[in-house]
Image 1 (spheres, rainbow, N blue to C red):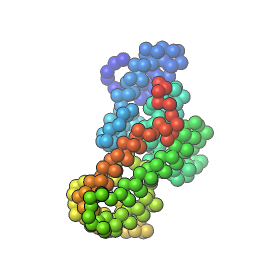
Image 2: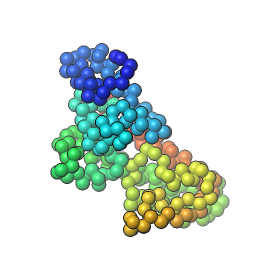
Image 3: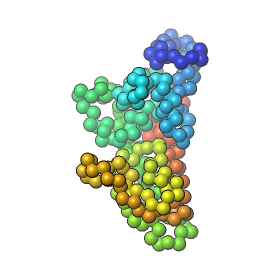
Length: 247
């Protein structure tokens, strides 16, 4: 297999033909080519993962691929039984949450995939993923370091952040901005981690700031948020019921 970048259509054609005509050596080579760009191992730098494969496979330069393109690639790899690529694409489809998936309607590009096995896996897996992500977030925010001596150390901030879970999508491999603020060591952090904290989306006032937890508790929360990211990645095949050994 040549080392230069192939157009996506050409790479897909090689995989299709090598699978159809049982050319195993060529099939394994083109799968290895795809593995250079499609994440199959955990990396805490999610932005780097996205940029690596988007720069090669995005059909619209300067734009993130659309959700319908994620669906198209997931269906393609599923039909050819290259299942270890599916967790990445099904995660990307699920990022906005189950409600957005259920709202897909006639006229939407994704509607063409409504009867596929991929859609079934996404719908059921997204619900499992949301529930698990929400549980992990609750567990982190409710935690308090055993050596913390301040009985009200993070009570106010905890209450506000717990409310966030009710109103925002919980699926994300990336640490939320509010947790990253904690990691910076600032004395005060946003009370909300979503962009518009008022009911009126036209109100662009910054979110109010609240006192950050002590060093012990903030370290505990940051570790919990980063552990959550790794746990989600490792569990993606289970959430979506995918046998990643198939390739």
